[in-house]
Length: 126
Length: 108
Image 1: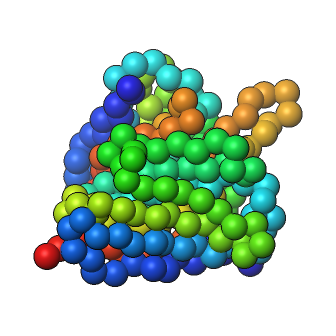
Image 2: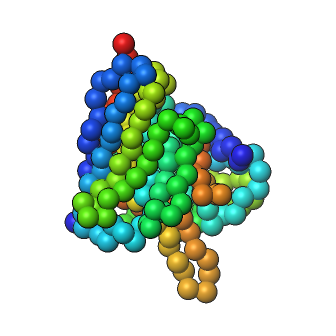
Image 3: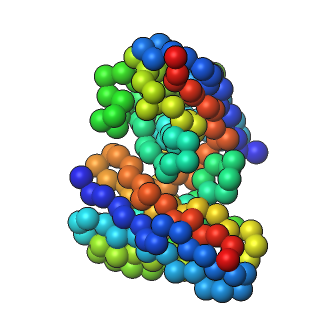
């Protein structure tokens, strides 16, 4: 079964740090770009960061650039998000999501987030 | 930066009715990179539609997507009880992802 399981969330004070993990199973982890997406309480979805299959390219939303670091471990089949200098506005459920490219022969190719974890909750509060 | 604006914010309908959700982009975008997701309370989002109009694996045919340029639509032909949820459009571009703010489809 294709599965993503996040962990590492919790309560942290403003300015503190937290490291989220996402364990992947049921697919070839090293073949996929992976993403972090967050959702503040009662709000919509916000893309946070992505890392390509070989870790060659890494991207961040402007809201977290310079504070968050995405990484992956190919032995443990895990994705990570190191979050430093946390702010109240970082409070959210954090999802990891697999990025896939659907290729239709003779047509086009399409980017999707096709597998999601159940999320881990981060609360930044004093 | 392209912004996706969804309307309405909330849609109140009865089971069996037709739902029409809109996603408008601030600039023209390729339909190849427009997707729709469904999210139920306490659950992760689920991919419904990719490439603006193609249903993902296992998605019932009462869900359909259409549109091009700046205007995209998700239609649920006949609402089933399990369809009451929040729906997000999403765009991929320049190695980044953008979501609309969501449309909640609630039971009238």
